[in-house]
Image 1 (cartoon, one colour):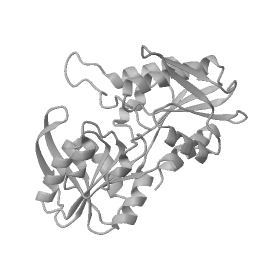
Image 2 (cartoon, helix red, strand yellow):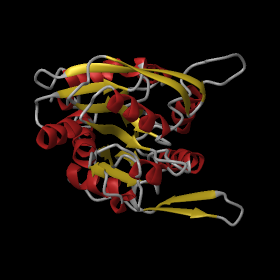
Image 3 (tube, one colour):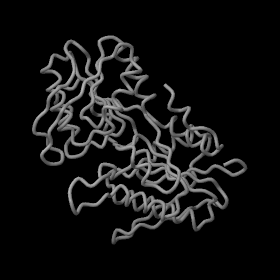
Image 4 (cartoon, one colour):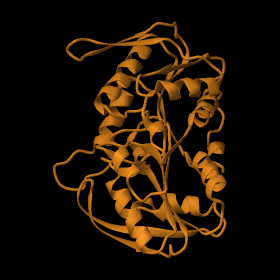
Length: 316
């Protein structure tokens, strides 16, 4: 927003990423205190004057998702009442994104509800990354920029594994477009799909590989890794079909329910993720490689502030 001061504020979900993104955007984080009362209620105080500023609030709604979401809403409300000129909710990881449609009667579309809450709190626009489903952009009644971590991940994959004998694998039919976007950026890379049958959430009954992965490095591409159970079964299916090794690659390391130990003891050669979600112990696990998306987010913030194009960041 030309002529207005750029301010960046961090919630408590991922302060390290917020600091690095602010540095990449060329500013310091503004002071914001979050206090929790003994009954669990949250209170927020913006300690710096942000009247008339173009403010970006960096907060992933990762675990504990409800607390971090409520914290984001309260910060946005505090900024609105402090007369910020424009408020952008920067959500590297958008929680509740998997609840994006009605799969059976009498269930909510929670990602739409979360979108409504963020707009109602006072956000003028949203900046997020690798949404689980593209239609979530349409749930908001304000502009949304959905960044892709692909340039960061692709550079590492190329440098680490080269261009030869690569097969990009989608873990399900819904991720084919994402996998194809990676495959087209490798020379002569194949494309395969895991056909899986799921009976209940986080539990897969059957898996089949569609495509040729024999004697290839299979790179599983997904937007997030949660419990890791499905990923481990997909890895076994790929190895059974003759893959030399399996690399898992995902933007969001949700990694819940004992996922760290489960993945560390699996046959996956390497797991590549970003720092969109904070895990203080992630460096303790040799198989997990974490790449930073802070420069990408910082660049996007700077471009939005200067009313410049963000689409150039998608070129890789």
